[in-house]
Length: 181
Image (cartoon, rainbow, N blue to C red; front, side):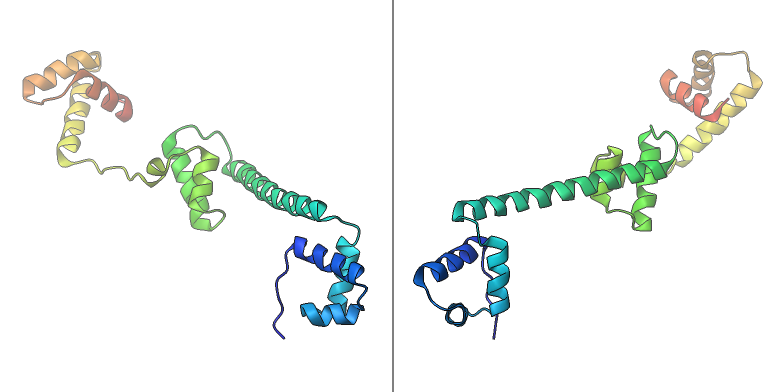
């Protein structure tokens, strides 16, 4: 016999109807398509409840399940951060560690974004490979820095512009800091 799925309210109504009608338990079970064990289990579980109490119980169980899920996400986040070891500040480093956790199967992408404070676009960003022009510029910058170690980036920018490079002060400052030159 195919079993039916009764809601909490329906279970309480069945129990109340059985009490009021004065039918035997066997008759009620046959009529509703349930076993005697099920009837007694419902009676033990919901026997003293009114219909509004059963509805309230259902709402509380639903809220409790939601809170359990949220707690599990928070615990997962703390575990991820503990495992990350050290201070993770830069987005690139966060992205790298989040990617490791996703690849190991410790969490899904969305959870890693949330726990590491990343946007989806930041997580999925792939850095562009430096092009040939930038590589040649870095070589020229190293050469100039070796030839003139006493000069600041603004004067090196001027020398490179004299050689025909179209660069700005800020770009050379960043590249020089990046290269350690």
